[in-house]
Amino acid sequence: MRWFWIIIALVGAATTAVLLRPTIDAPAPAAPQAPSAPPTPPAPITRLDSRTIRLDDTFDITGAGSPIDPFLINWPLLISPQVKDAPMDAVEIPASIRQLDGASVQISGYLAPPVAVDETGELLVMRNRWDGCCIGTPPTPYDCIEVTLTEKVPVRGKHLIQFGTVRGRLRVEPFMAGKFLLGLYRIEDGEVEGFGN
Image (tube, rainbow, N blue to C red; front, side):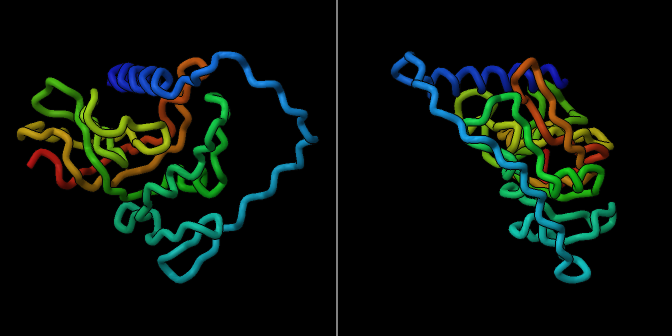
């Protein structure tokens, strides 16, 4: 199943590279580089009340991170590690997001199953709607999550890409193919609401 998403991601990356290719192929002159400063430590996690924490002084999430009270995470938090024009193999995961690894989370988004199946135990949850080909916005490694479900769900209905909610255990693990980052987030032991209806 993962190979299906690898092929889809590579097709999307190749299409994006062709569309965004510079019009002049000559390399730009290298700018002198200043000595790099030591990295600043991440902002601490601040507890605002019994159910709300603030990550990086920016993102407030509620919940306890447990299966019965998952963290309610959002897409701006998940795409925060993305840096424009960064090399494909430079993956900097903020400490605040690394601390969510292994916690139970809940997120809503567009749900896409594998194609040509009657039921599935895997889904892709995405920030933007995409049909896997040419309608919508192809996902990046930062705005999609590969989900493994505890129970298979039927794949039915005219429109297979639907909006729904997923709960499960978040894993923050860069998934690379050579120098290309294909994925960053997975949800294990997932449960889904709003799919297949």
